Amino acid sequence: MGERDWTILDDEAFVRIAEQQIWLSAFASNNPRAPVHKEADAAYDEAERRQKPWLYQRAWNKASRSCGYEPS
View 1 (spheres, rainbow, N blue to C red):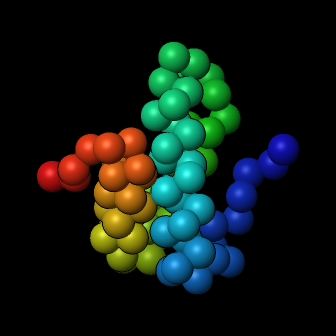
View 2: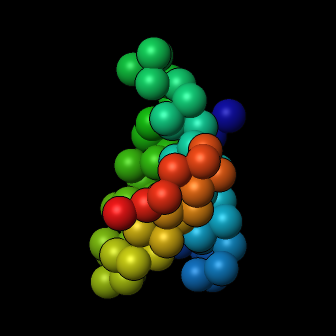
View 3: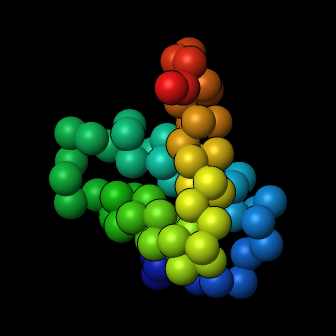
């Protein structure tokens, strides 16, 4: 499984997929070598590259809510 090309996603798809990758990264926290951590990092980097850091924050908030937490 190769790395995702985050640059081709529009903002809506970016948030949706980043949410999944952030959730999976948290779920795999017991395995620091899980490839999903790289994907979550790549999502962060892409949001910064786009100069839209709120996209990553929105995805993080959605992932947090899906686990029953209220984001700060």
